[in-house]
Image (cartoon, rainbow, N blue to C red; front, side):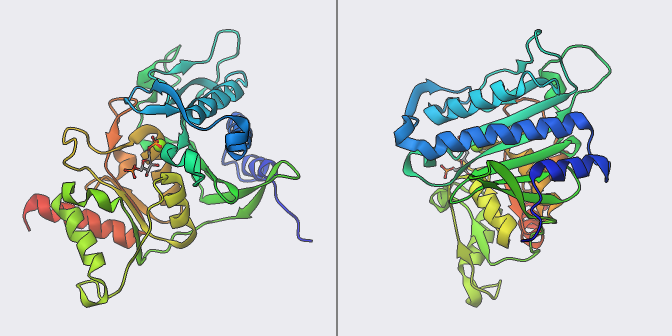
Length: 339
Ligand code: AHM
Ligand code: MG
C-alpha cells in the first residue's frame, strides 16, 4: 500500500522543510481541522442527534439561524479559543468579534469563519460546509479590535473549507497551492487525497441561481444568455448548469473539474453589493481559487484587493475558471465604459 500522508504530516512538512508556515499557524490549522471533524459528526447524525431545524433566532444579517449554524459556531469557538495562536475570531453567526478570554494566552492570528455554509440545505441532506480565513494581526499595537480584521484578502495567511458531502473533505491553501484531505472515519484522521489542485482555465459549466434572472444587471444576463444559446450562439459550444445552493459544494466542484460560480449584485436589494459576505466567504474562496489557477472578481475588481470597511460586508462574486471569469469581468467593464 502506498504511504498515506496525513494532514499533520503535510503541515509539519510545510513548516519544517518548506518554511511556508510558522508553528503557531500549523497548530491553528490543526485545531480548525479538528473542529471540522466535530461538526461533521453532528451533521452526520442529523435527525438522530436532534440537530435539524431552526434555532428560532436571527443572526446580524437578519437571517434565521438553524440549530446546526449555532452548534458549528460553538464548536469552532470552543476548539480555538484556548490554543494560544489566536487573538480573536469573527463569524457569520456573531454580531461582533470574539476576543480570546484573558484566562488564555493571546496569539498573533485572527480567524474568520462561516461555520455552516449553505444552511438552507441542512434539513434536506444536501452538501454543506465550513469556510475559514486566517489573517495575521498587526503587531504595532496591543489588544485587538474589529479594525484589525479589516484587511484585504491578499493578506490572508491561510484559508480553507470543509465540505460535508458524500465524503468529508478539507481543502486548504497556505499560499503555496491547494491541497485536499479526506476524512478517514475509521482512523479519525485527515488523509491527503489531492495536491497542487488546478482549475482548468476553460469550462462548459456555470453555476448561478437562475431564478434571479429578471433581477440581474445587463452584463450577467448577456453572459448567461450566451451560455444558454449553446453551440448555435456566440460561444459556439453547449453549456451545462449546476446550482447546489451551498457555495462550498459549488466551489468544490469547480476545484475538481472547472466551472464558473456567480452570485452577482441584483436589483432585489440594490443597496447591497451582493448576497455573499466578503470576509469569511468571498475572500477565503477567492484565495483558494486563485491558488488553484482560477480567478475571482466582484465583476470589476479582484476580490482579494478589495479594502474591507465592515466585518459583515457583502460583495458580488464571480469565480472559477480563469478565462470565463475574465470574460464576465470584461462584460462588466464594457458596460461601464459603454464600449
Ligand atoms: P448562508 O451562509 O446563510 O448559508 O448563505 C450563503 C449561501 C451560499 O452557500 C449559496 O451559494 C447561496 O447562499 C445560495 O443562495 P440562494 O438561496 O439564493 O440559492
Ligand atoms: Mg455562507
